[in-house]
Amino acid sequence: MTATFWIKALQLIASLALLVFIHELGHFMWARFFKVRVEKFYLFFDIGLHKLGIKWDGSLFKFKPKNSDTEYGVGWMPLGGYCKISGMIDESMDTEQMKQPEQPWEFRSKPSWQRLLIMIGGVLNNFLLAIIIYAGMVGYWGEKILPFKNVEQGMHFSEVAQEIGFNEGDIPLTADGKELTGFGLLADEADVMLNAKQVTLLRNGSDTVTITIPADFKQKVENSGGAFINYSTPVIVEKAMPGDGAQKAGLKKGDLLLSVNGVPTKCQPVFQEQLQLHKGKQVMIAFSRDGKLDSTQVTVSDVGTMGIVMRSPFDIYKTEYKPYGFFEAIPRGIKIGCAKMAEYVSGFKNVFSKRGAQSLGGFGAIGDLFPDVWNWEKFWDLTALLSVILAFMNILPIPALDGGHVLFLLYEMIFRRKPSDKFMERAQMAGMIILIALLLWANGNDIYRWIIKPLL
Image (tube, rainbow, N blue to C red; front, side):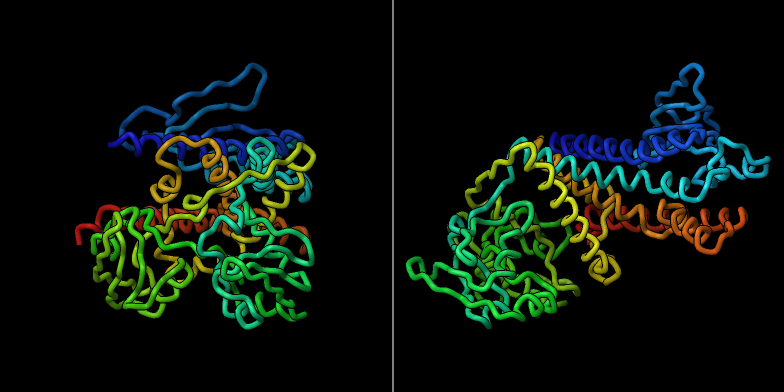
């Protein structure tokens, strides 16, 4: 295994360890605040190997302080964490404890509102961690901005935007007299233009034009379901995925893709639109490699992709950093965290599409998102995003997840009665089966992409 593999793996483990610890700490803190006993607090799972004839409880490290009811430790399986709270049915499936008389220090003896706070504690901690990381990033480094003026090809505008006068390659200058700079962690300037009455642009490198924004423009953009403005970024291959059309056709990192079946693809959105028009077919891709023109036939998948990661405009053009003081960084971190959550929630519906199901990835896919060399800024940026995702995924109303417990607690609060222990046991078991199936599917996709597909 290469050094790159270990660098990515180390970043993945460090990021997941932090996220899992903070998540389980949320449950632990609220449980102790309400005087609920916590029997175990583990980073990663301590699954024993007794069924294999090995006398080992699965812990790499553990200790129990004097006069404490809690055993702390680190398990060997880095798939999550574990906070065993007395008096509740969780992944331990400790049903024997539930058959005993109810005790005042148990979860089940507490009012429903307290139990609700204990259950959402992990989600709240993860979301708060994301906000803290984003605030820390912009406070320490500043926010990385790609100025509009630094993009040689200018901006790409959607059909809705072009209908009111925007042209391909225009560079935004001002909105209602306010200077427009560029996009950072958020596309704030796009919102400014959407809510403006007039936007001034630089066209053809020398002409200044002013576009009047109609009152219904914002609504039309929202109805179109996409962004009305984006960087006109050339299509440069950052990575060709193993076994997919691009890799089989010989495309490599650094190739500049110029056209699809003779149609020029000046920017990434146009390239993606062309692939969508040729789903399941072969197309001729013209490209430039080391200054030499060439072409190759590429098979487009049934969902309109050919298996490449395109280079980000932030890695192509010169960026700048916008500084934030301490009292500016905190509200900026909150805004970024909320926007990232809203963005992920909005895009989650795509998981249920054919393309979404095929694109689901496991630990290999997540690890591959980290850079080849250790970069603290990229590490924290990705960790913050994963923290947002973890918060959302855990609040989904699936039994065995925090959201499943929250769902049953809300049922209890509304109808004034608890679901039976037998029902909770079956629901927990069903939830665990669902989660294991999703885990196998996601990691199975990784195995198929990286091992099986290249051999086909």
